[in-house]
Length: 108
Image 1 (cartoon, rainbow, N blue to C red):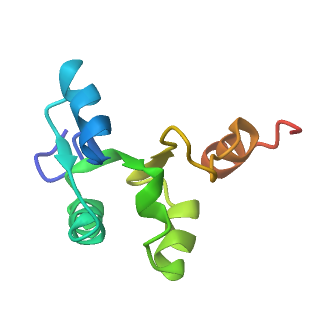
Image 2: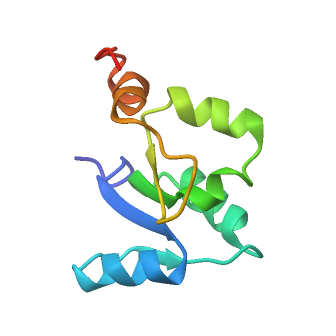
């Protein structure tokens, strides 16, 4: 694989609790954010071409621009998965996730 190509790295972006959990299992690219820097951090990592998968706290999704969210829904490079936090209301169903990522309707 060429050095300039996406290397398949995974990053986690979210609140302290989420980031700590992933760091405990060995995730090195885990970025703790707050409401003051979450969108900026997401945009920087999304556009960096360094990561092929971004695991992002669901709370950040509501602060992203609609145009960017529309692009994320059809993009697979990088693939963005929003992780619901306990008590969150906007969890994406498995069926919707499969349709968005794989383009397959599994009949939810």
